[in-house]
Length: 224
Length: 398
Image (cartoon, rainbow over all chains, first blue to last red; front, side):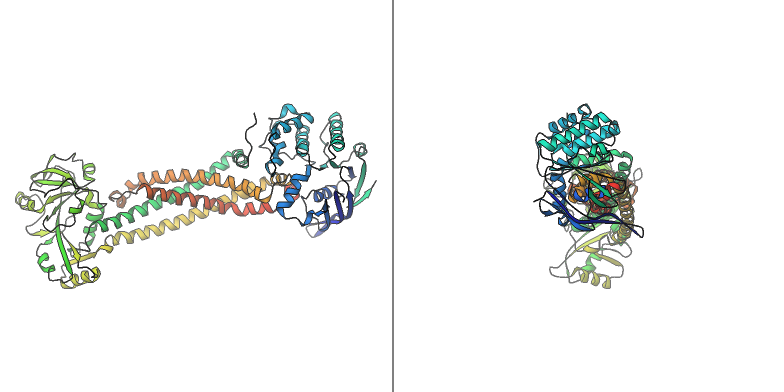
């Protein structure tokens, strides 16, 4: 059984009187531990596709099966648990809560989890160190640069080591050296923890680091 | 050192982000609750004073001179110094009414400091000890004898109110010296502030000529009706038989005050509805703004696994913190207002009955619940709206 199976998925947004097809009849199978990149122009439907896979957006038609379970038919409690336990999100914009410190932002998924980790704080600090901002554990987002905020968000996505990481331009604000470090960390986690990575990028060099490359064009998905 | 990170601490931090807005919301709830607590304290103090007073008088019917119902209520409920008289012959006349079981009478005299008496203005009650069933139950057990000539009893609150000091002091009343020999139990009536003397003293008082009283006059007759009879029916019979008399059945004592109170009540209710609507609207407006501002944060929380119920819990915790703090401030403010402003309302100033701690606690609970309920009601619709948004759409909402 595939870890993620997307079948005949479409998403249509209504903007005024106009319907815009963001994702057009996409089917896709991703096995556990794959390292997948998606490239494509802005507005091609990449973010919409991974949002539906991650359960933060409902499709207009089609199915997303996770380990054989259709996530589109889950009720709110189970869909939230699916996101909490199986998905680590990295958004392309700042996604930290302003009233929480870096450590607390990293711990955020744990606040909504049924499982409690006694060593969570220590682990959060370790992840912050792994992404290079161990000294900013007590800082609030307003005290961090854009790149540092991005790294806190990366640490948050990795913190509970979910089986699937969905990353939307995860290294967008980072300098070249940090970008390489982060990608190496992803690659290491992918190999050692068998975590599945699906990441969107405009950087073809980064896309080339993936074991499987996909391209989206006007809502249609193709293998590269 | 990491501080504990829970949904409640999360909610508290959210409130601290906009202290002015939080303060405005708390102030609105505090004003609502304080108005409510004040109104409830006012109404319940007046109504319980009247109820208790009518119960403690121990009579089924009060008989007064025609046109003196209001004056009698003023004396009995509000400790207003008023005098009204009729001939003692009414006692004999009333004996012809079949339904009457027992009767006693009292004469009310009004003191005037510097003219007749060395106590400030109050009512002196001359009662007949042989027939009395009104004052006797108020006498504490330690005063186990009849009141002699030249002796007076002090109403439970008069020692404080008219500053005559402790018992066993001599005071001049209507040109005669009286020794204050005992204090009556608290009755909850206006007579708690009065002085009580044996009506045998009236003769000496009349001789000195310093009281506005003529020989053979009394103020009021307290009547107990025979068991099983309707006191309204007996009162009607008295009024039909003697046009010069007015009667008040026990349940009608304070009727004029209750009618006034009903009007005041309606004003209070109308004001409360308006303030509640305003507070609810303000809560709705502020929480709609908060929900809009925090849509992106809610989207992020949902994306990392927060259920709808978590979002509701975070917002409701904020609402309940605001509602509780506002309500507590309102309860303190309303209670303080009801004590301080009581002196500005003549009806309250003269009421003998104070609210018990239980009544105050009950009013506080009502205030607390209503404060929180209005807060929750106002915030419910924005919370429902934000929790139902798809996470990605909430994140993208600007």
